[in-house]
Figure (cartoon, helix red, strand yellow):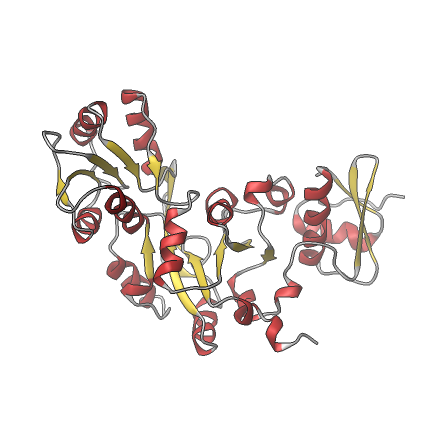
Amino acid sequence: MSKPDDLVSSLYDAMLLDLDGTVYHGARSIPGVAETVRKLRERGNRVRFVTNNASKAPGEVAGNLRGMAIDAEAAEVSTSAQAGARLLAERLSAGTPVLVVGAPALVAEVEAAGLRAVREAGDGVAAVVQGHWTETGWRHLAEASVAIRAGALWVACNVDATLPTERGQLPGNGSMVMALRTATGAEPEVAGKPAAPLLRTAAASAGAARALVVGDRLDTDIAGAVAAGLDSLAVLTGVATPAGLLAAGPAERPRYLAADLTALIEPASALAVGPREGWRVTVDGGRLVAASTGSTDALDLLRALCGLAWESGHTEVGAADDRAALALAELGLASGAAAIG
């Protein structure tokens, strides 16, 4: 039986939660999230809802979460717009004009940081900040191009190429950033995940001594945690897949792995990537061979497989017995695989 001090909620004082794919899918909360967030608060954990989306104000995000029965206050929401504005405020003196390519929420964050938001290039514009906005058009990009070519500091709130919606993946801020890269030959500084500023801002706002990042994307959430020097938990309710986890490079590897966010009230030792009781994984002929020594838990097998895959560089898998074959099929790694050896 696990000791109380082994619980995830005991090892970390703040939980930095990604939203889409981790807390909700579109307009629907992922089952168990609301209750888990409530239990975390009861245990004294601080919670931050962290989003790369710069188009919505923290109050609007919090309101959406409350509409899903998830307790949230505006002060608990950390956006890439906040991180971008903070990055600018660290570089520029108060009152400096900043050209904003983005939504009114981004304008508000720039002004809250003590800078002057403008929409046109001109004398005195020292920086351009760019965030997702459905109204962004050629005129906005043209003004930004003029300012960047004149030497303005360029900050992108995030570089996500796509944005998940009910209609599927649509162009995200990264697609608009690419247009300016092409037009100017310049590279922006990035505030959102996978860069470190957003997660560091979120952790600081929670006064965290030790924060845990929870997310469903290896290339943004987990990579952002690695860049910020924070531990992370990858969940399988969104983009991450077992195959993707096996192939993850050092910059995209989580410390923990779970089916969903409800694992935050479980023992951390049960979630850690690495050797697992009940499974034996070895390298044979350039592939990972799994054998059950009593377990049928597919997620535990995945934790063991990832540990050896990351150590050895091998990602092809095989099963040494029927239990392992069934677990691999459940993970989508070797569907219907027959036992070997």
